[in-house]
Amino acid sequence: MVRPPEQTLVDGFNTLRRGAPNMNTLVSLGALASFSMSSVAALVPRLGWPTFFEEPVMLLAFVLLGRAVEERAKLQASSDMTALLNLLPATARLLPPSLPVDSAKSAALASEVPTDVLKAGDVIQVSERPFPTHAPVFPWRELTSASRKGFTP
Image (cartoon, rainbow, N blue to C red; front, side, top):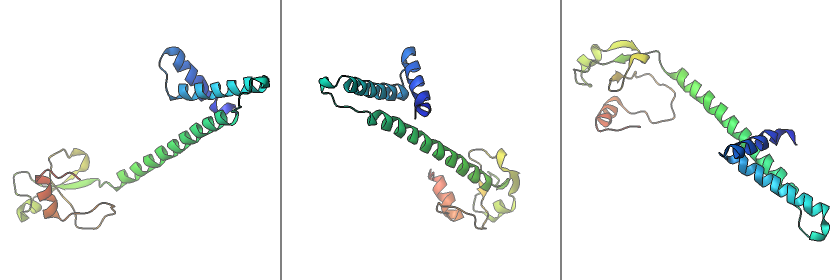
């Protein structure tokens, strides 16, 4: 159990020495203070001090567990973002800016463009086919009128 928290302890003391303490410094100081006091209490029993040998081990174990959970969450979030990016279509139907959005002529003049050329303010036509989503899907008229009012989902 000494090797896994060694990086935390070394980093804690290195950052303290540089004058820029971080969370590892706090954990290192707490664990070593508790272990040192318990060692003195065990070596000199006439002091009558309680021992706390379990606490530094549990502190370091919880810190390592928290880091493992955090790393797992980061990997899951990265995987979820990749899955979302795979849902993006390669092209979109860009509507001409000069015509009203809901006009039939505007839909007829829409051009198929790569999605990477779209910029803020462009109006695109959303296809009517279903697509997977966990958010509400608004009808075309409701979405355009809401976007004109400054609606941001």
